[in-house]
Image 1 (tube, rainbow, N blue to C red):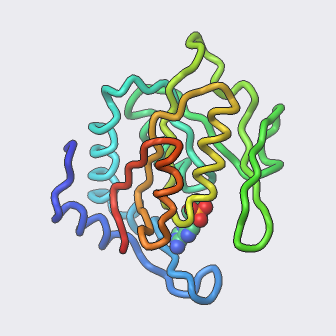
Image 2 (cartoon, rainbow, N blue to C red):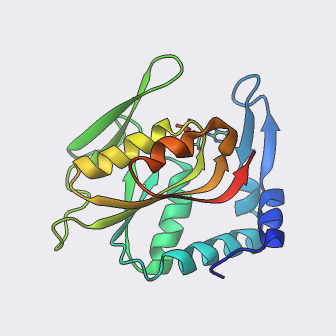
Image 3 (tube, rainbow, N blue to C red):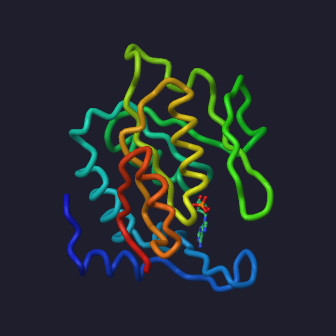
Length: 184
Ligand code: AMP
């Protein structure tokens, strides 16, 4: 279904387990393995995303390592379109381009294959997907990377938005944002 009801959203939220103090004290980790392990929740979520994106002229789905691969690759096959992985440094075997971003302490980086969006179109349309947006740093770097690789990011999609961290506000400056579930 294109629009989820409040009941649908509550059902999806309940299917996600919160693990306190993981991977470090003070973090409430949103564990989507419990959603994946509930076939009604996983199917509801993926059918909703399919309805949202089926007529949007999207050429590729780019998923952020690693949980973005699960939702992104599932959606790509449902839509009959291509999938591209955006990975942590040193994981992709062919020539890559990369984008650095700041963490609370230090920097991190994401990479994509240089020819990831090589197709008949000059500037293909890409949907970016990840399981969760927190500060937005990873997603912002990924949108920049899609641009550097010669494609157009039409939207950044997240299953969960930790709204209190305001990461979506940063991303909205460079591309539209859609979050299925929001946590205040
Ligand atoms: P950020 O760059 O701060 O938006 O962090 C987003 C990335 O970190 C995503 O790939 C998430 O999977 C992961 N992440 C950050 N915070 C959490 C959390 N509380 N629970 C689960 N995953 C998280």
